[in-house]
Length: 372
Image 1 (cartoon, rainbow, N blue to C red):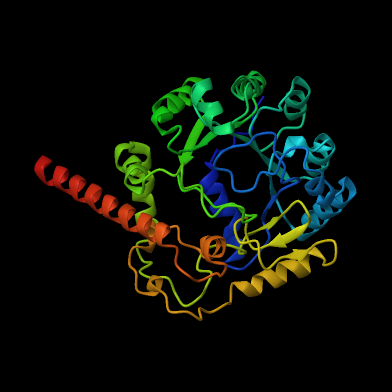
Image 2: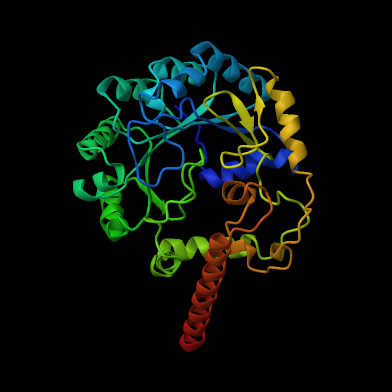
């Protein structure tokens, strides 16, 4: 019997093929959605988590039927990828119903979770109705360090149990970490743990300020920028990714006159726990209530933001290091309350990354010359 053979392609290539027919046009291909802003953890660095028993936050959350209605609108609009995040999505008593509904509607669901609330029943559900991927936050390789971040005794054991329940069922899994002063020394151990489990691992270290304005910035646990940037030069995988980024953005010399020169609102959008739709997960204003405005109308409205022109003089317009810089309207809004003012901390990070990448490139060039 002859069997058909199928050529496999990686996810990045698939993404290019998927978006090529759009020819640069806007299309709501992907959405991030917070079923809740509450979390069972109390992480020192988190920008959004409300206490798990916060009744005011709970009362403001969308009902099950409201969430289903929004999912219906997403499907009708052509959304393919849905990321469930939070807060902790599994805190919702109706999580199983929401997840199952989204998957049976054909959405490819990515679940962001801390892993501590994954039970046998949840793991079995994810085995039977598979997600596109599950991403679990790992804040340390040991109980002491992990729980110094989460501030919840016993959370490390629950997280590891959740990870193992998924691994036992062959569910696609990625581990990720936010590095800070409390845990960065365990980065090699966290990477080794992921390698031992044969799962992908990634990390970051720029910590966002609280969205509710209760604190400007988690300064006490933010790593010095020099320490953070050193990871780029000391990690071969990150060196490779920086090289790819340089190649991808080599023709991009400066940011242009638009406020949004990133991809926000081009293929994606965000919906919070109260049903407010915004251009991305970090730019929360302006927003449009999907309880009052149809999703496609809100999509058109956030599209207008991409046409916004700068009204303030900005060093970004003449900067040639922007390919290494994370400065964006989200950072400006979170720190300064507008979408244009440069955040000095982020700008300094971009400068350091640029210098580090240049040094790496010079070292590689020297090695090539010496070899020849």
